[in-house]
Image (cartoon, rainbow, N blue to C red; front, side, top):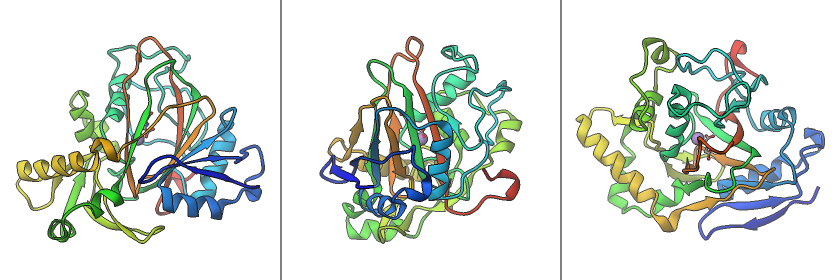
Length: 296
Ligand code: OGA
Ligand code: MN
C-alpha cells in the first residue's frame, strides 16, 4: 500500500490518501503511519466513506491499548448509542439518533470539547493517539482546530522552559467541564474520574522533542497558590494557541483524524448543534495497557 502524504500547515499536520481501512490490519503500513505521525502530530486520513466501527477499533488497537468502555459517568445517562467496545460517542445524538436536548447534561458535557485540550489528561494512564471518524457532518461549522505543543515549547524563552520543566500539574475532567458551563459534578461522577497529576513538560518519545502537556483539564500547579498556577496555565495555553500556530480541519464525510495527544492540543468549534446532526466516533489509545477488565 503506497501512502500519499501531503503537509497541510507550516508547522505540523498532514493529509494521507490511500490508507484503505477495509484491508486486514496486518496489511496496513503501521510503522510508516507511526513515523509520519511522529513528525506531523495530526494526520487527516482521507477516504470516501468512514471505516466501519469494527475497522476503526481494529486499526486503533494496532496502535495501542484502548479502553473497552468510557468509564466517566455522566449523571442521568443510562443508555448508549454506540455499543461497540472501545468506541466513544462524541456526536450530538441520543441513543435513538435524535439530536440531544439543548439543556441536557450530555450536551453540556460535549460542549466542553470546545475548550483547548488534550484527551484524557485527567487519567494517570495518558492517551497517546485519538482517532476521530466523521459519520455525519453538519453543513457548516464544527471544524476541529489543532496546535503542536512541541512547537509552542520550542518558541518559549530558555529560562521559561527551564522553570516549566520543574512543574507538575493536577488535571480533572470536572474542572474543564465546569469551565465549559457544566453543573457541579455529583459524588458519583467524581468517583468515576478522580483526576491525575502530570509533569508540565515531557519528552515526546516518538519524536524525541520536548513538549508542553496542557489541557483545559489542567486545574492547578502542585505547590503553587491556586490563582498563580491558573494564571500561568492560562498564559501558556494562550501562547500555544496563537492564530498562526493553529491548523483548522474542515470535515468531509469519511475523514478519520488521528492526533497524538502527547504532542498536540485540539478543540471542537461551534455549529448549530440543536439543528444539525454531527455524528463523530472516537477511539483513544493509551500509553500503558489497561487492567484486563477494562481493556477492549
Ligand atoms: C474529541 C474532540 C473535537 C470535535 O473527540 O476528543 O475533542 O471536533 N473532538 O469533535
Ligand atoms: Mn478531545
